[in-house]
Image (tube, rainbow, N blue to C red):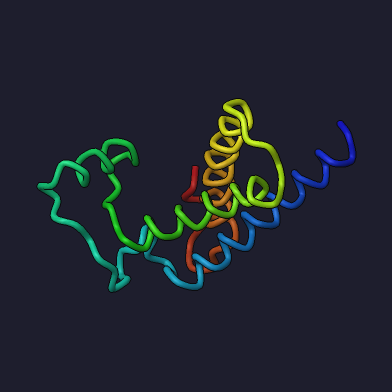
Length: 121
């Protein structure tokens, strides 16, 4: 493993840690924006039903649409800073997105002082 890869892994872990900390401060013990005054579409709409299927039954909220979009834009920054785009690099970026949301979600449970980590498993 090269030094560049190691630095990228540490950077993404710190990014996930910041996101998880930020989200625990916003959501508190009520995950998935349960108590936030955010827009929620009508559950009868097709996009809402599709979102629920993809997200394991979780409700679609504007808060999550925006935060996921922020992460996707952040991960695409290298393309705007001069990295050449290719289908392979895009698939790598998309896979990083899924890796980031899994680590970020796990860290939410680890660092949230209002949540018992023992219940995670």
